[in-house]
Image (cartoon, rainbow, N blue to C red; front, top):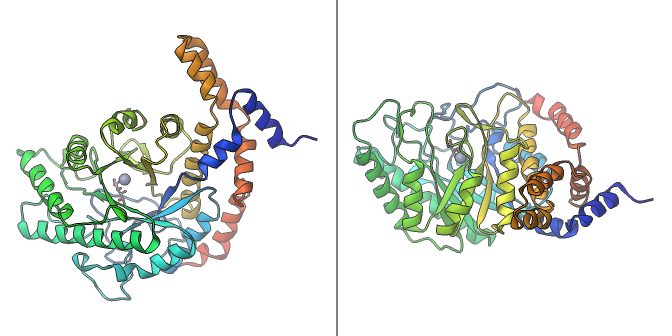
Length: 414
Ligand code: RNT
Ligand code: ZN
């Protein structure tokens, strides 16, 4: 008797899709899991504040309160994810053994445990300086502050972070991507929009002037349209960073929640990658004013994956996740969004590309749309389940496993 997978594979093969080749290609596309979904972007500095326009809503029990709990939750989440993975850390996740270490003085040794753990789990590490939740953010500004002392502090933070990132790359023999997101902005209309932008560019120049081996670390810069408390002007806008990245050969980080609600990042990839070598994605889901809802398998997520696959951007687009929800089980939030990313990639890898391309080439737009729509309901689930099985991770069974983890571990955290 033919298996469900065998039948599905045949249906795809009849449309010219090689499912085995899709699996093999997906095996090589890493998705970088963001550490901050597990503890509501709190980090280990115990400041008790979250600012920079970031807001995490909800008080679902079970938040990771320290590094060991966070690593345990990440391990649980990783056990539900097929395919290749990386882990994305923020500077506020430094482990300083109870000692207060200033952000401009953090060193690779404060991440030694993360590195050992990453080695154990065969994970590459990515990194982010943390330009928020800190008293040296003055008047909503860090790298673009008019106060030279404030700028100096944050420039030093950036330099310290790149040294840490480079050490990750060296120790793991796996290049780290360091992402600079700087929330600086204005609640109300500034008279001068230029001077802060000039200061931001100058601060970034100072950070990047320090040598860093590109084999071990590469930098990305992330734009944003607006944030809570920075509604009227964000210094690091899209045009600012697109220009900065092109001029300075940096990666541009495109966060799916950082544009106007009807504007999509999937459409930007083929433009930006004509002029830049590489891009970093923050796969997220904007909902009205929030940029960070749990990623669902919606049209845009599928379009992002299609762009990567159709244009062979596997090596040029670095996929990172960025969402946080404290109103549901956090391991489940993590897993739902991340599994959706792999699902979207596998869907894109198994679309009947030749059939659709030929319809387009011959000017047959009816057939193009017909096949795009028909392909949505091909027996994808059988393909996905098989991929999970081969990767040794559960199918829908992960939900019960996550609920069991909640019962035995998460709910015990008070
Ligand atoms: C915020 C940005 C940024 C952060 C993380 C914590 O709007 O998207 O990437 O979410 O760095
Ligand atoms: Zn982001």
